[in-house]
Image 1 (spheres, rainbow, N blue to C red):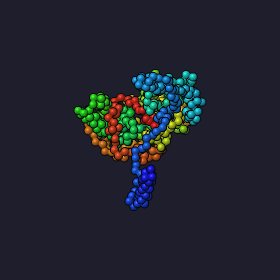
Image 2: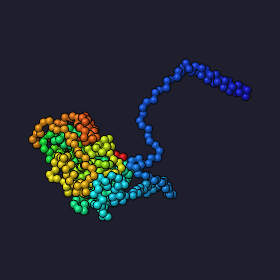
Image 3: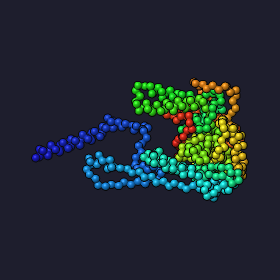
Length: 465
């Protein structure tokens, strides 16, 4: 036993001595390594409980988890109703304003600016278009309920205060009045008036629903990019490695791009950055007293009245949109991504049946004169209508004879912008400059065709939160 204890004691002492020696030599044998500098890594993964409804579209989200006893896990794993998420969206459909007092709550200056409105309002002034608008909104909610990121935002669901059908008791002039917010339409192009592009923000379309036959052979500034997108789609379709599913997508895209190429070669369009126009839902153009492209209109905001025309058609479930030219006049900070007015304080007055035929390039002086006459027929305005200045520079060379080119070339150059004040001359920079005209078709071969009035967006209109 003594020998065993002695051996155990010797082993412990030897181990202790070895550790002491290791600690003394460690600083010389194992020099400390410098602390490495932190290097960038991929963004951290967002964890935790996310309120996805509020994250995407401002919807208030209430969530609960309910459990009930079940069978064994192997059995429940195969049962579709053992693990279920039920979605129920509750939306309050707003009531339209109908009296002059209700209209004045959101636009206090309106009764003073258009004193004849009060005599045009009656108990049956409410338009069925308001109910149709919200029916379309609810239908879209039902169709997209499983995709919270595709649902209408709170802002876009409550984007219309009222739609009223009015008629002046003496002149019998009819008018359609809307109260809404204002989003920005920067679409459109016209090589005859402006041979360079004005940029290509997200959801940009080089066409507007209002169009007319081209008058010169100047190529549309977005035609080349659309043709390139068409060629890329055709080349991909011809590859033996392209899957059948992808070919189906490309087949539709090719048809759309071919139609757009033909439209851009043949027609000119309004230009959102230079022409004063508004956008109406497609359903408004099929009503009993329909609003038509080219109808004259007024935009009332603050203490100003702006003459305009109906120049584009939007989706049936959204309302309240005007060209970038009007938006920048109301708010100089407006861009294709920044609306000028978020509150429901913009009044749009449209005069159905007033469009001039045939369509052609907008004549700002004619728009001014026609709107002056029409506003007098509904009781007049207490202030002069805003006067639009032409901000498109005159062409320095004579216009060639019409003969559309099949392979145009585009030479980018700076474009003028709409000034914050109509009395000022345009500056040499544009609202959203780009080095060259680049259409959406360059990166997205599924660009919608422009052979018929476009029912758009979805972001634009209202592609902002």
